[in-house]
Length: 499
Image (cartoon, rainbow, N blue to C red; front, side):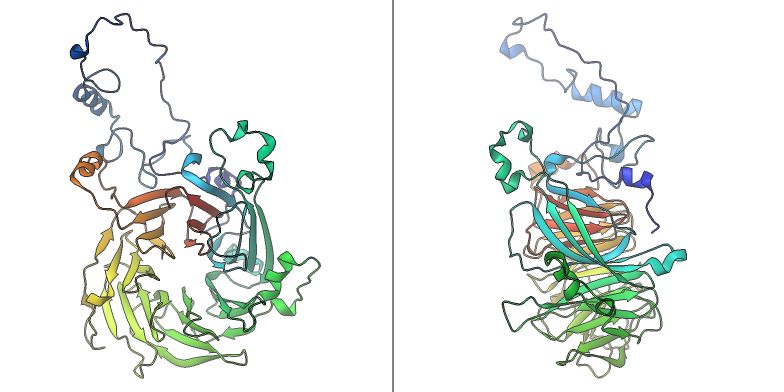
């Protein structure tokens, strides 16, 4: 990913799936229609025809002959991420499809970010919205010293105006839902000397319910080191005027030097299971380590590595229900399940889920026997862990069929995440510049099958397509139902009317 240019920024707009691109060369010669034969036909003499007054078969034959049948042989269907834009065409969002939609830029693009839980309450539905996040930058290689860890506050995130809002009276000026001010991005910068490949935040529960929890970040970098920061002072400075953050407070509280190569796999354990803090890290050598925060606030890394993958560890995640269990995804095409109590440091279960790199995985928080994973070939699927059997460390990875799989994307899957409260909704980001939302509960009946038969390779479970240039990660906001944040060339914050 390189620094975005001004030209690129002009085209970074979101689009709902099925929308048409702007600036198309379309002749519109239809003027006012005058029926010179008005009232000359009786009801039983009406001839059923297509949209232009001709029989469907005749019109479709002409379209096919003229090349008007575009993607998947479907007339007039534009599919984001699948249909190529013609020169001069620009994608534009359909405002009516979004409840909220904002784009905000940082000095350098960010490969990874994480949403920070705040003290503003759960299940928030009012506008304007406020969010907090952390991110790590990817500066140009010649300017590695320009990299930083960013602590972010997004505010004044207004609701999308609906049709007729412009004509509303001034009586609505005090209504939060009518807020139309520009979004605000505030940031605090902590110096880093290399690109952040993956960043995750963790909050240490406070014994005093009136006090904010300690917020930590772990950043896995291109340098192979993992840095842990305490960003509490930086978060507090957003909302406490006059707060000054010292240079010492911006330094790491711990640097993990166990890895010999850079990596992308990083995850904090649930505070329910490990309140003090327990961190998993994995690198491109296929090696994983556990680092534990002590009661005194220090960190200790167990130098005994977990080994078993034959290639790089791309993603890692703790089980949401088992305190000692975690899963890892690798470019060797496998997902493996581990138990930190194992003296052998070998996987308990190894499953071959792809013939290509498995880039990302997500463990359902609601139905904890479901695990989703996405691969380099654009395919992603959901597996039922109850079908996976323990295997000896010396045996080849077992085969297991997913209970659901999708090949809609034609580029690598870069991020995947279950909805925090709905075990049928999944968000997926891919290298085709799209974030897709999926509803796994959807099933086609015979009538729906006929209605959708014309659009090939578009699964009925595909709920929404959001265009986002160079998208790398997407996360749901657990305290604002249905809201998502994605990073790529810029940050995109959106909420669709369909979720």
